[in-house]
Length: 283
Image 1 (spheres, rainbow, N blue to C red):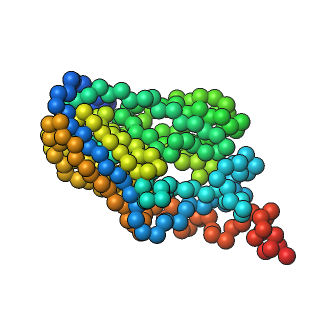
Image 2: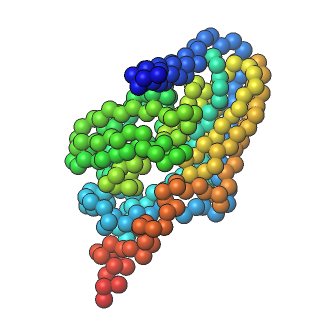
């Protein structure tokens, strides 16, 4: 088999795989649908935030406008929890639903302002396009990583004060991507792959509800980008409502692989010279 034939077959298989996924879910009228409701919570001592010393990055004045402490550190508050432990930004998703309600998913728009990507979490379909609206007057040279393997799947330069188009194509059956600015490491946003419209991203209280579900047995998945995912096997009865809760242990945070590498990482004692601690050390 010559090289041209191999390339053709590989391309055809890739196209067939993407087409199969896009056709896997069929929209239909749901009769006697059921509902799932519940809450995602976190218990235990709050995990420490991730801290990045702005003195080590460009555009310090602009980047210091938000989420910055008195020592000129950008602080990533990854765990937003209500007074009763409700956990924000948990994706609750039913897996392998073949047919059901319309897939009325909103297009993904990521804002980039003051060296910060928002929102923190999106849901994304295989091959889905997204837009990054850069409100900053500087370029952000971003990369999209396949989080399960730490491999870059797209380079995405984001010019200043422009809207840039991107596209996520997951490898194999992987589900998680992370977009990071190569110049400002603390600029991060996450995406979770979905196959059907039966999902919910929790707000601050942690509550969720998914309705109009065809009766049947399903796997219900709960994912937070710094926690180990959880699964529950559930049965949705005709016109029924079931309560399902997910509890995350704050002592079992899973840090991204690249942040566990000690060599070359930012040291905890690095400080901004103009901070109170920096002035004290300079005496």
